[in-house]
Length: 169
Image (cartoon, rainbow, N blue to C red; front, side, top):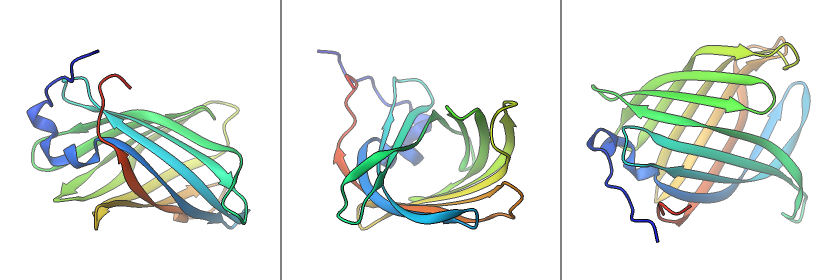
């Protein structure tokens, strides 16, 4: 069994994110129909000054059953001095995002600093994300600017922590 590495001290402000979170949310955008989704997010670390991050979502039907996979993203969250935060996310759809933001207690606000797309990726120009710990649940909201639309609400969710961080995962 692998021993859990000691958390890098720089990560203390975002240590509340560590673990596996599961829940559901709603999504919509002017160019698509509204939808319900399920989600799993895993935040981990290896003792270095960043968190690892993987998020998977899937479409839910009216009964809350999984229909098909939706988005996946993975990346790294780096805590900087003075409550600043940098996040790098990559998507299998050909998009890479760099976010900058701030952590205040258990609230995180991030805005894209840069977006890069492959030649075949859909147009996506900006994102804004909020994360917060509310009554022990991870609440989040995501606004985006894509396919000619201005920055506006796209998805939000509420997740419960279902497992503490495990270095073996």
